[in-house]
Length: 302
Image (tube, helix red, strand yellow):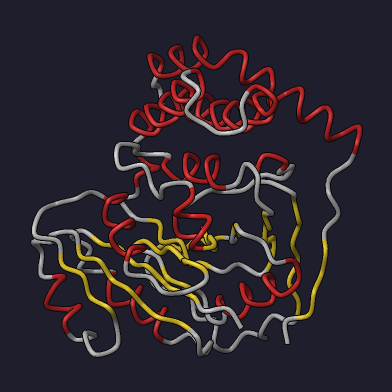
């Protein structure tokens, strides 16, 4: 039975942080620890977190570190075999750790990509719904071989602790799209599982979501492009096409979003800089259509 370290980070998320912490503490999985890093909140979040101090490892930052430094600070306190990251406005779904445990038992991955359940306003009531009886997942030799779409979020990343630190953790200077940056660095050579069902994370949709700021997100995608051009990702020339296809797929998605929201400068910037990578993403999709996707495996969730 692997031990999970759930690392929750927050900055001025007073409305949400208690839900996030409670969702972690209420996991029936026994071998876990919950680490919470408050990134110098000024809205009363600390008073709320103090109610949980006997049940969590509580880190208080005296300066505003930013999301990635806070995640690294929490990960540095982790003792588990795997680190489960959770943003302070999201929640783990009931039995999420059981899903991750069964996935690990089936294939011993170093990286797991969970699945998101989007909601707005009230937390969906799932207590009266039938508990999932199976897990649908896809196994890849590395993240770069992923051939299915996946809504990225820091909250759905589960990574073996040793693999996380071999990749030097979160890049403190990379935001947003830092989740893509991490998975490109961690996952290029490690076994990766993508969980298709059941969802493992409640992703809260609200006015402060980073993905609402198209200009900021496009800047994050551009940062991915620049880092790839500068040789910032492992795998060398041999894995360049695979990395380019992943980055190009992300760029194409945000070109469409920029067009829909009238962010024409950002659209032009991405088109100019990401053209070859978008071509790689299209070639990868054609290749997948011809070859077929990796098969979906179903395992019992006992």
